[in-house]
Length: 405
Image 1 (cartoon, rainbow, N blue to C red):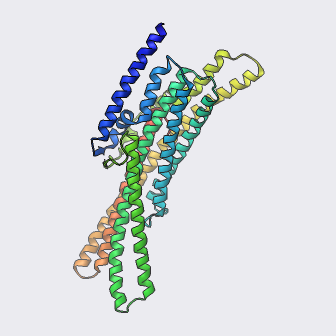
Image 2: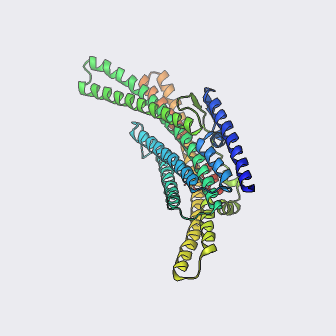
C-alpha cells in the first residue's frame, strides 16, 4: 500500500513536471528569435532537450518502478541523437572538403579537419557503447538501478557535448563560407578584367571561359554551404526543444584561454577524471553486480576476470584521453602563435601593396588580392583560436567524466 501511494505521488510529480516542461517548450517555440552563446548551451540543452527531460523523468521513477522498457527507450533516443550529431559532422566535413578554398596543406585547416574527424570518431565510439547497452536491455540482462541511472546521466552529457559540437561546426562552416564569399568577389573582379582583355583580343576564349567556370563553381559552393549552415541551425533548434524553422542567431565564439594549462592542477584533474568517469563507474558497477551472485566456478572466474579487465581498461583509457588532451592543447597553442606571426607579416604586406597602388606601381586587382590574402590569414587565426578553444572544452569534459576525444 505504501509503495503504491509513493508511486502515485511520483507519477503526479512526473505529470506536473512534464506539463511545465511542455509549457516551457511551447513558450520557447512561440518566442521567436533566440541568440545562442556558447556559455549558455549546456543550460539551454538540459532545460529544453526533450530526450534529456525524458531521461530526468525516468531517473525519478526508476527507483520505485524499475522498467527496462523505459531505459531502452531513453538509450535509443540518445543513440538517435548521437546519429544526428555524427551525420551533421560528416556534412560539415564534406562541405569543407568541397569548398574551393579548402587546402589540406594549410596546418590550420588540417587541424580543424582532424578535430572534426576526432569528433566523428567520438560519436561513433559513444554509439557503439550505447549500442551494447541497448542490446543488454533488449536481452533483459540484469542491470542495477544505479547502473541504469549512470547510463542515463552519461547519455545526457553526450547530448550536451553533441549540441556544443553542432555550435562549433556551425562557426567553422560560417568562417569558411565568409572566406569563400570573399574569394568569389575577388574572382568576379578578375573575370570582369579578363572580359575586357578578351574583348580586346589579348587573351583566348578558353582562358576567359575557364575563369567563368571557376566563378560558377564558387557560386555553387556558396549556395551549398549556406544551405548547410541553415540545416545546422535547424538541428540546433530541435536539440534545444524548439521548432526547427524558428530564427536562431549563433553568437561568435569566445576567445580561447591561452593560459588555461597554467591555471589547472593536472594531477588533481587526472584524479577527478577517473573519479567522475561514467564509463569507469559503469564498469565497476557491472563487476559489483556480478559479485553479488557469482560463485567460484571456472566459468564465474573467467567472467570475473573479463569484468576486472574492463575496469582496468577504462582506467587506462582515461589516462590516455587525458594525456592526449593536454598534448593537443599545447599543440593548438603553438599553431595559434604561428598563425598570428603570419598575420603580422600579411598586414605589413598589405600596407606595402597599398603604398605601391597609390604610386601606380600595382593594379587594383593586386590590391584586392592583398586584401583577400589578409582576410584569409585572419580567418586562419580565428580557426586556430577556435581549434584551441575546442581542445580546452574537450579537456574539461574529460575531467567531468565524459571522454570526447
